[in-house]
Length: 175
Image (cartoon, rainbow, N blue to C red):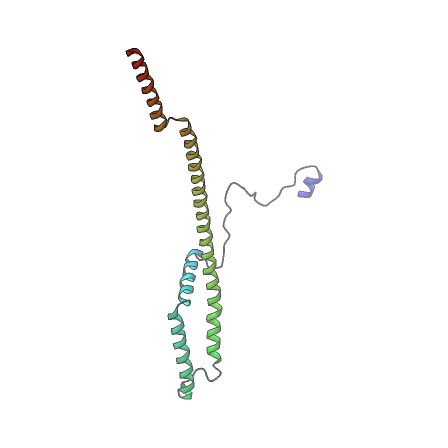
């Protein structure tokens, strides 16, 4: 049908709805779970902070020693991970596989905060430099202006000269 219209010189109709650029798109249905990236970032920072403490290292050491001691010294029927401790290795690998990305995420968030703080510091420094330059120009203008203004010493010397002139005139008139 569209070909017939195009062959006859008519317009080809497009059956898709027209996209309006002045309106937001209708959101697609997502089957993925949604999460708040900011909350997840804060959680990752808390975990990364805990992983970097002595408390974590002490607890991790206690758990590993207890694990190895139990699986080496307990009766055979109560052991869950025998000598090569493969399950312990798996658990430590799993913990490391989650810890590394969480630490990187926390570092990236800290880098972003540092970048914002650096930009704010740079702007504050630029304002301080501009203020200092303005005040320097004002002080220079005042110094130039003071060069043209009568100073106390200059006025005193002028007044002394006038007093001498007046004294001389009075003496001349008195004589």
